Length: 285
Image 1 (cartoon, rainbow, N blue to C red):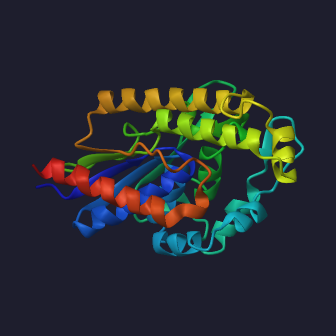
Image 2 (cartoon, rainbow, N blue to C red):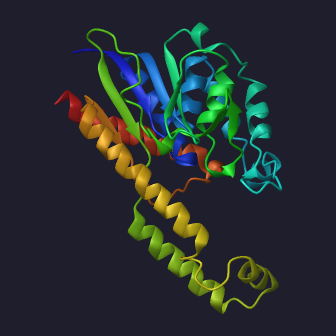
Image 3 (tube, helix red, strand yellow):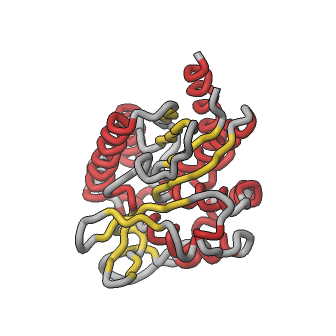
């Protein structure tokens, strides 16, 4: 059975930490990752892995709690983004040095989107972290990256799981890890429950929360935009899987963890490992 893997990692915010578990399970079962392509969080995890620093990144993520998330969030007063996104990249670069993509030990690419043309942009050379920073530029949240007359935003807009961009070798198997899916029904139920609690809570904290997110917490401008974007990305990832027909597709639809649950890294990594184990078991059959 072929053991060389061309690996594609999807977008998904904090849910993308499951990619770490997927990589660890592949290696535990003696698969050899010979190339990697990633989008957004998949570009970050894939780049860190290609640079040989995945273990260090996982150890660092264990130290990330809500306080540290706030410290790493460099808020902006701009009209087109909330967070600059520089601080988080600089923190990771303290233990993962920036290198030219073409000097990495395995072929790697990151996918972003040019907001001006609407075209997909694939980074196969140049600064690793410039490519990652462009790929993770979640619209409205992170500041877009301006490069060569382009305005670069999250690659998930055009190609959320770039299985068609990963470098292939003779006899390898194509593995895609998709964390773009949600259990939307359960999330809706949870938000309804939170909204009901908010209405009955008379504390000062609840009053302040009500001023920021009034009434229908489960259905407001932010949740409407976020859910709509997620649905479109999910449909694009499903279409890519149908087009590319990977040998192994690890489809991880999370109900408990969201795109900003970076303080729950170990639990999300465990989910990724478990789902990959199940997918590989089916593949071997």
